[in-house]
Every structure is written in C-alpha cells, then in structure tokens.
Length: 155
Length: 103
Image (tube, rainbow over all chains, first blue to last red; front, side, top):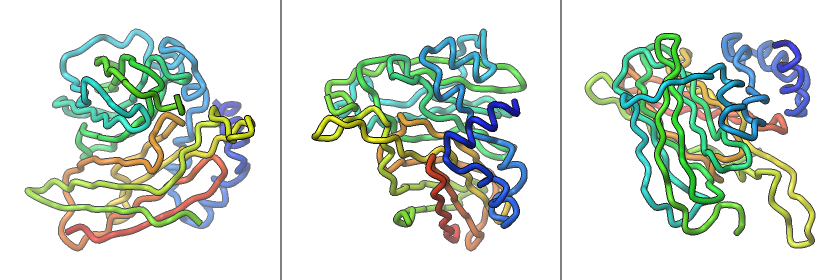
C-alpha cells in the first residue's frame, strides 16, 4: 500500500504535495488517505482493473442502472450515469471495456450521498460500459453496450 | 491557473443536487500532435466536494473522462445558502477550489 502511494505521488509530479495540502488545511486527512489508485487506472483489462479495485468476483446485478445513450455519435463526449436504488452504496466505479485503460472514474460516496452520479467519458470505439458498485462490503456490477460512431481518440 | 468551475447546487425536498463543469483539457497522453510527438498526459486525478466542510463526494478520474469534465451527483441535506465547495487536483499537481452557495 505504501509503495502504491509513493508511485502515485511520483506519477503526479507532486511528491509531498499531500503533506503540504494537509498542512495548509486545504484537504482533510480523510481525503489525503484516498490516494489516486494508480494500479487500477493503469490496468489494461477488466480483470486487472477489478483486481486492483479489490472487486474480483463482482456479481452481476439488476439493482444498478447505467443511463447512457445506446448510440453515441461522438466518442469524445459520451454522457454516462450510474444510478442504484440500493441503500449504503460506498463506491461507484465506471469501466469502459475497450479503452486502453478501462477504468474511467471511481466515486466514493460518504453516507448521505445518493447512489446517483453522472459524468461524460471518452470512448475509443463501441464497447461495453461497466458499472461496479460496492455496497455493504460486497461488489456488484452491471453493463451496457454503447455504440460509438466517431471515436474519441482523434480517429 | 485553470479557469473557474461552473457549479450549480440546488436544494429541493431535503436533497441537494450538484452539477459541476470543470475547465480542463484532460489530455490522455496517447494523442499525437501535428508533428507526431506524443502530447503528455495532463488530467484531473482527484476531486472532492464538501458541504459546509463535510465531504459529500470524493472522485478519482482517469484519462477517459472527457475534456472539460462534467459531474452531477446528489446528497441528502443541504439548505439554501449553505456553502458547497468543489476542489480538484491534476496529475501535474495543479489544483483549484471553487465555492458556491446552495440555492
């Protein structure tokens, strides 16, 4: 864990920045602990990403919905939302199977924050989009295919 | 310094809905410029939203988040006039915090 933190800090070019921020009171210790998960974001496959997230063996579930268009005209800006009616959702991660690095974003929801996030992502090509949700200490997931007619990587 | 974020936070029936539009190029590090050189990655890695100083969302972004990232989420609580602050940090250590009053 410490090695990962060191790598993440190096990669950010901001060695010691967390310390400075924390000292300046700009970020709270709880935020400082939630370092950028480099191994998860650098993973090249869904399996590696799930492993890095500690979500290996996540079960498919219908309790999560992905709100996104079936066909995205512009792969550079694909609106994707994840909604779950389950209570006590702790983490929502958004994966795009055929991107060079599948993990697009992960959200940590403190108690009181609803399991409903929306963002926009880049997709290189038509792919399954996978939402992984941690609820009650367990991971569940769902997926949806989004067709891309114009890629998001300058293609 | 990056441009300010556009933040809209509205409270209704005990739920506050927050929409954030950040201004950031979100360079993936996989794109080449016109002379064929790779453009170095430059993207937001971490984001945090706080309601009156209490964290209501933490997010980690990868390079697949679109240019000028958009984010919407909801949390319980929040009243008109409360402070909502959003801060982000990118992989070069640049950071920005913006604050709005909930309406």
